[in-house]
Image (cartoon, rainbow, N blue to C red; front, side, top):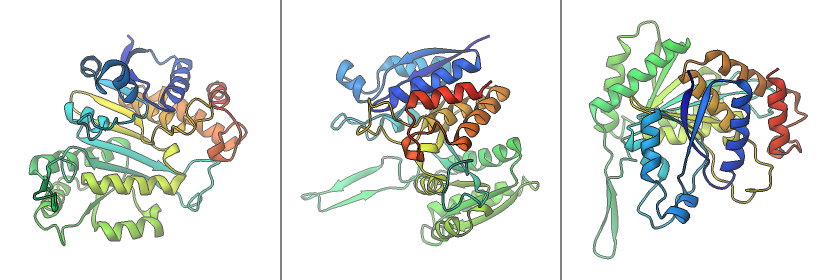
Length: 337
């Protein structure tokens, strides 16, 4: 039986890397059926809205989406289309793996970095509760929302994820020494839930210490669980350890629907030139395959990507090569065997 997937090509380089990723997935013969829908700046220009109702209905029907990067138009009322989709479907867990890849040289290539950031995706400083203070916008205020219910479900998700994929340790990151009520609640919940999982090691670190430790000894971390703002920052830091956002996939997981994406931007300066690196979205597609219990297909995709990166002959300019997006995709398809 085929699995229907909502497909959002996105803006900028989005259509190019989506086309490349779809081609690889079709070469895998994974039994996916695409339902293409619109979102982003291009959708706004054509349809008058950056997030059409049909797009939301499609994701709701299919319960899974693969998405290229989106540009948020100015002046439409959206802080972020990505945030709007996540909030609409209560995609509460943002999951971002960062692992050193063969053939990609960074300062940490020999470190064994292999970590996953699990970020609370609906509350915190990104809840959107902010306002200007008159007169003349002399000040502004943001409220950090932190409910016990949301803390419990993200921490429990992190522990269950660790068990499911065979990871050994959870690091909870917070600022409870200063944000005593909000982050204090997050830490309290984490410590309580950790006692239910005696097979998984648990520690907590203050966020500033965490930043220092990640650039000194990143190999010590396994699964990181943290709040929305800190997770946004730390997951980008983790991407920097392995070569950048162009190699980093992301998943937004909810009970009713989940969305898989490249976490980098639309790169309008290279859009249409055929030189974009599709690795991040291809790796996100691998996460989607695992989510759909297509584990063998996910393994084959990961192996083919690693083989092309390690060989280094058909990689794009950002990785030191001269291959086009199409040539890179050709090499991945060939490596699938």
